[in-house]
Length: 240
Image (cartoon, rainbow, N blue to C red; front, side, top):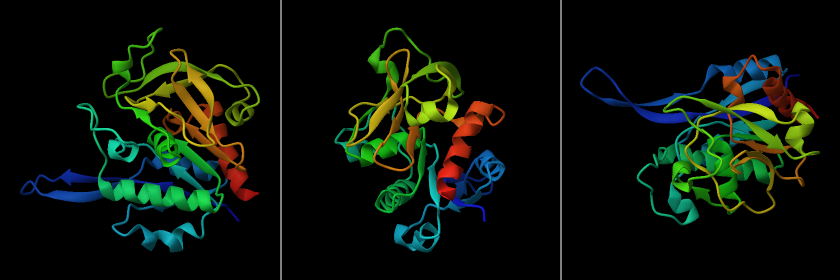
């Protein structure tokens, strides 16, 4: 049987052309599903719920979870005011994601947290974020976003780390589309990859059987065999 891999989804109010109505919409990049299928898993969408406990019948049948990308976390979760460049996600999604995180942690589900996901995981563990990377004026300068599109750079991996054991190369070329980054690292999380400017690009919890957070978007590099290995490793952990 294919292991069941839950994937969190976006939730947004989409403006329609008919009467200017805002219609709630759930969405997910279909390449997540393609990559999970290719790795031998079965993708299961986790819809943002108005009452997150309603998701328990879905969550209780999962073998692993992916936390996908999206807008920003409410800074109130880590004790800050909203920065002018922060775009908070809809509360419905935020409440759902943190409920799913709590479930995954409690049940030791293999976990892959991508971009927003790594930030959510860090905040869930009591960490904090820098709300706008350009404010940090880091040296040497590294482009972490090219307007609304991806930038590209390499990350240095910690030898022997989970991400290094998966891709088996160092440095690792990645894409990049984020304006926030990790600040104080949450409880029991270990940084395992860094951009040249020092920004943390990966985390793991060595106490867990598979718990990996990455700041880049491997689903947006579906033809890259190194990035495909990340999904294969998650499915393999879910299978065992």
